Length: 183
Image 1 (spheres, rainbow, N blue to C red):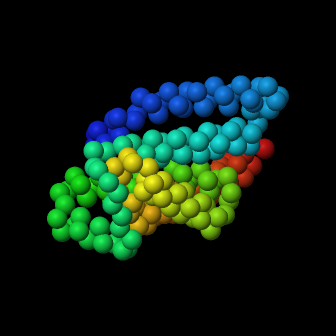
Image 2 (cartoon, helix red, strand yellow; image 1 turned 180 degrees about the vertical axis):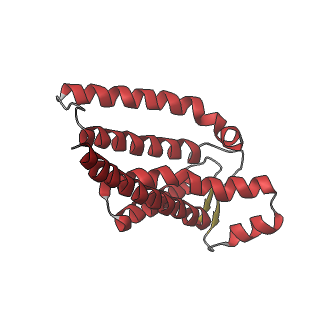
Image 3 (cartoon, rainbow, N blue to C red; image 1 turned 90 degrees about the vertical axis):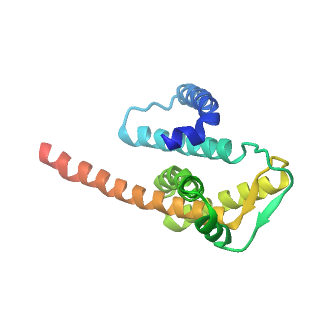
Protein backbone atom coordinates (compact mmCIF):
# COMPACT_ATOMS: atom_id res chain seq x y z
CA UNK A 1 0.00 0.00 0.00
CA UNK A 2 2.90 2.35 0.75
CA UNK A 3 4.23 1.86 -2.80
CA UNK A 4 0.92 2.89 -4.35
CA UNK A 5 0.67 5.90 -2.05
CA UNK A 6 4.24 7.01 -2.77
CA UNK A 7 3.96 6.65 -6.54
CA UNK A 8 0.30 7.67 -6.93
CA UNK A 9 0.97 11.02 -8.64
CA UNK A 10 2.75 9.34 -11.58
CA UNK A 11 0.81 6.07 -11.91
CA UNK A 12 -1.85 7.31 -14.39
CA UNK A 13 0.73 9.01 -16.63
CA UNK A 14 2.95 5.92 -16.41
CA UNK A 15 0.15 3.70 -17.72
CA UNK A 16 -0.57 6.11 -20.58
CA UNK A 17 3.13 6.08 -21.52
CA UNK A 18 3.23 2.28 -21.39
CA UNK A 19 0.18 1.92 -23.63
CA UNK A 20 1.73 4.33 -26.16
CA UNK A 21 5.06 2.47 -25.94
CA UNK A 22 3.38 -0.90 -26.53
CA UNK A 23 1.38 0.45 -29.49
CA UNK A 24 4.52 1.85 -31.11
CA UNK A 25 6.48 -1.34 -30.44
CA UNK A 26 3.76 -3.55 -31.91
CA UNK A 27 3.37 -1.20 -34.89
CA UNK A 28 7.10 -1.24 -35.70
CA UNK A 29 7.29 -5.01 -35.19
CA UNK A 30 4.56 -5.49 -37.78
CA UNK A 31 5.83 -2.78 -40.14
CA UNK A 32 9.27 -4.38 -40.38
CA UNK A 33 7.81 -7.90 -40.47
CA UNK A 34 9.40 -8.87 -37.18
CA UNK A 35 7.01 -11.51 -35.88
CA UNK A 36 7.05 -12.74 -32.32
CA UNK A 37 6.65 -16.33 -33.43
CA UNK A 38 9.37 -17.93 -31.29
CA UNK A 39 10.48 -17.67 -27.70
CA UNK A 40 13.69 -15.69 -28.31
CA UNK A 41 11.95 -13.01 -30.37
CA UNK A 42 9.21 -12.73 -27.77
CA UNK A 43 11.81 -12.52 -24.97
CA UNK A 44 13.77 -9.80 -26.82
CA UNK A 45 10.56 -7.82 -27.30
CA UNK A 46 9.64 -8.25 -23.62
CA UNK A 47 13.13 -7.17 -22.50
CA UNK A 48 12.94 -4.07 -24.73
CA UNK A 49 9.52 -3.12 -23.34
CA UNK A 50 10.76 -3.84 -19.79
CA UNK A 51 13.75 -1.53 -20.20
CA UNK A 52 11.57 1.22 -21.63
CA UNK A 53 9.01 0.80 -18.81
CA UNK A 54 11.81 0.97 -16.23
CA UNK A 55 13.35 4.09 -17.74
CA UNK A 56 9.97 5.84 -18.08
CA UNK A 57 9.00 4.94 -14.51
CA UNK A 58 12.33 6.07 -13.07
CA UNK A 59 12.24 9.37 -14.95
CA UNK A 60 8.63 10.06 -13.96
CA UNK A 61 9.37 9.47 -10.28
CA UNK A 62 12.76 11.18 -10.07
CA UNK A 63 11.83 14.23 -12.14
CA UNK A 64 8.56 14.94 -10.32
CA UNK A 65 8.83 18.50 -8.95
CA UNK A 66 8.67 19.12 -5.20
CA UNK A 67 7.92 22.20 -3.16
CA UNK A 68 11.56 22.70 -2.11
CA UNK A 69 13.20 25.90 -3.30
CA UNK A 70 16.75 26.12 -4.59
CA UNK A 71 19.37 23.46 -5.06
CA UNK A 72 20.67 21.18 -2.35
CA UNK A 73 23.53 18.78 -2.87
CA UNK A 74 25.16 16.06 -0.77
CA UNK A 75 28.46 14.62 -1.98
CA UNK A 76 29.45 12.91 1.29
CA UNK A 77 28.66 9.18 0.98
CA UNK A 78 26.23 7.79 3.58
CA UNK A 79 25.74 11.20 5.29
CA UNK A 80 22.04 11.53 4.49
CA UNK A 81 21.46 7.85 5.30
CA UNK A 82 22.98 8.37 8.76
CA UNK A 83 20.93 11.52 9.33
CA UNK A 84 17.80 9.73 8.17
CA UNK A 85 18.51 6.81 10.51
CA UNK A 86 18.96 9.09 13.54
CA UNK A 87 16.32 11.74 12.84
CA UNK A 88 13.88 10.31 10.29
CA UNK A 89 10.57 8.58 10.79
CA UNK A 90 10.09 4.94 9.81
CA UNK A 91 8.10 6.04 6.77
CA UNK A 92 10.84 8.48 5.70
CA UNK A 93 13.48 5.77 6.07
CA UNK A 94 11.38 3.34 4.04
CA UNK A 95 10.59 5.90 1.34
CA UNK A 96 14.19 6.96 0.92
CA UNK A 97 16.18 3.77 1.36
CA UNK A 98 13.87 1.05 0.11
CA UNK A 99 12.27 3.07 -2.69
CA UNK A 100 15.63 4.15 -4.13
CA UNK A 101 16.66 0.50 -4.27
CA UNK A 102 13.33 -0.88 -5.54
CA UNK A 103 13.17 1.80 -8.24
CA UNK A 104 16.24 0.41 -10.03
CA UNK A 105 15.63 -3.35 -9.59
CA UNK A 106 13.61 -3.70 -12.85
CA UNK A 107 16.21 -1.61 -14.69
CA UNK A 108 19.03 -3.93 -13.56
CA UNK A 109 16.91 -7.01 -14.32
CA UNK A 110 16.01 -6.09 -17.89
CA UNK A 111 19.34 -4.50 -18.85
CA UNK A 112 21.17 -7.61 -17.63
CA UNK A 113 18.85 -9.82 -19.70
CA UNK A 114 19.77 -7.67 -22.70
CA UNK A 115 23.54 -7.38 -22.16
CA UNK A 116 24.21 -10.62 -20.23
CA UNK A 117 27.14 -8.76 -18.62
CA UNK A 118 27.09 -7.89 -14.92
CA UNK A 119 29.75 -5.18 -15.09
CA UNK A 120 28.17 -3.45 -18.10
CA UNK A 121 24.73 -3.46 -16.47
CA UNK A 122 26.26 -2.05 -13.26
CA UNK A 123 27.95 0.74 -15.22
CA UNK A 124 24.68 1.54 -17.04
CA UNK A 125 22.85 1.70 -13.70
CA UNK A 126 25.50 3.96 -12.19
CA UNK A 127 25.63 6.29 -15.22
CA UNK A 128 21.84 6.48 -15.42
CA UNK A 129 21.59 7.31 -11.71
CA UNK A 130 24.37 9.94 -11.92
CA UNK A 131 22.64 11.48 -14.94
CA UNK A 132 19.39 11.74 -13.01
CA UNK A 133 21.12 13.36 -10.04
CA UNK A 134 22.87 15.83 -12.36
CA UNK A 135 19.60 16.74 -14.08
CA UNK A 136 17.92 17.15 -10.68
CA UNK A 137 20.62 19.64 -9.75
CA UNK A 138 20.40 21.59 -13.03
CA UNK A 139 16.61 21.80 -13.36
CA UNK A 140 14.60 24.00 -10.96
CA UNK A 141 12.34 21.15 -9.77
CA UNK A 142 13.15 21.30 -6.05
CA UNK A 143 14.98 17.97 -5.90
CA UNK A 144 18.03 17.15 -3.81
CA UNK A 145 21.14 15.88 -5.56
CA UNK A 146 22.54 13.15 -3.34
CA UNK A 147 25.41 10.68 -3.70
CA UNK A 148 23.47 8.33 -1.40
CA UNK A 149 20.75 8.09 -4.03
CA UNK A 150 23.36 6.92 -6.54
CA UNK A 151 24.63 4.31 -4.05
CA UNK A 152 21.10 3.05 -3.40
CA UNK A 153 20.17 3.07 -7.10
CA UNK A 154 23.27 1.02 -7.98
CA UNK A 155 22.36 -1.36 -5.15
CA UNK A 156 18.94 -1.75 -6.78
CA UNK A 157 20.62 -2.40 -10.14
CA UNK A 158 22.75 -5.11 -8.50
CA UNK A 159 19.66 -6.73 -6.95
CA UNK A 160 18.08 -6.71 -10.42
CA UNK A 161 21.19 -8.37 -11.87
CA UNK A 162 21.04 -11.11 -9.23
CA UNK A 163 17.35 -11.74 -9.93
CA UNK A 164 17.98 -11.82 -13.70
CA UNK A 165 20.89 -14.22 -13.19
CA UNK A 166 18.61 -16.66 -11.36
CA UNK A 167 15.89 -16.10 -13.96
CA UNK A 168 18.34 -17.11 -16.71
CA UNK A 169 19.32 -20.25 -14.74
CA UNK A 170 15.66 -21.16 -14.34
CA UNK A 171 15.04 -20.48 -18.04
CA UNK A 172 17.99 -22.71 -18.97
CA UNK A 173 16.71 -25.47 -16.69
CA UNK A 174 13.21 -25.31 -18.15
CA UNK A 175 14.34 -25.39 -21.77
CA UNK A 176 17.10 -27.97 -21.40
CA UNK A 177 15.74 -30.40 -18.85
CA UNK A 178 12.01 -30.20 -19.12
CA UNK A 179 11.99 -30.05 -22.95
CA UNK A 180 14.37 -33.02 -23.04
CA UNK A 181 11.86 -35.06 -21.02
CA UNK A 182 9.24 -34.49 -23.72
CA UNK A 183 11.37 -36.07 -26.44
